[in-house]
Length: 290
Image 1 (cartoon, rainbow, N blue to C red):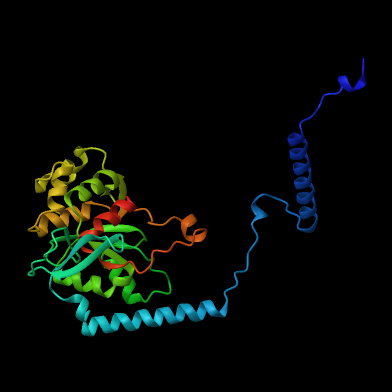
Image 2 (spheres, rainbow, N blue to C red; image 1 turned 30 degrees about the vertical axis):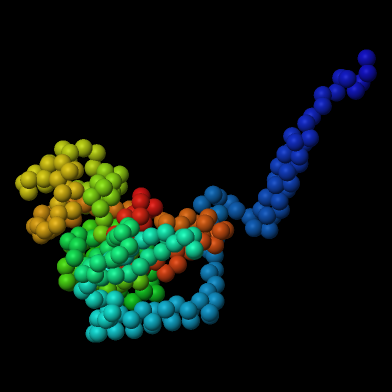
């Protein structure tokens, strides 16, 4: 009998894996000689964080520009962008460009193009949905952080329902580069409450699993189910007392980012200059972030 037949053949992939494991063990042993570690708790070493001077200058410049804009809007207002006229856009298909084109008109004008019409701003609406799209970090001026905190927007990609009054409108103009807001439809509000709805009970975030939770905490106001909350949030004439109780009861909605970290880092996809008032187009952005 041949000796070659008695030997067991080892696959090449297994030999390569063993070689890699041996090399890894050798590297770890060499690292222990240079940096000995006695216990598991002492494995974390203090890392020195180096900040480039260009980063410090860039942060200081952005903080200064944000403060200048905040003071200017607070004194003079948003001027042209804060007009109290409803902007209506018509979307139609351009055969020459082979793409959808928007034409801007006012609410009083009659457009000859009978295509999709939608409000491009939130003027005239009673309730809006606002999402924080840029984090308020230490480089953000304190005035902007205080305004965002008063709107209950403290974490990035969190959204809240707000009554679109004159005071809320002014506060949104002050922090417009940091937020994205618009008019949600009844279907969008229903999906938000059912899929992302959480309530505040004893300072804790609790999921709205059934209507018994709503009836227990909002039954005195006549709200006993999810449909009642949706009706309050989408009413044309806002009941301030009921809306205030519902907004305090609901925890800010935690949304997903429109672009993932992989898309931003590897594919270099950016959100662009998307911020501020979006009108009825906000429904599409909410669907993307659900």
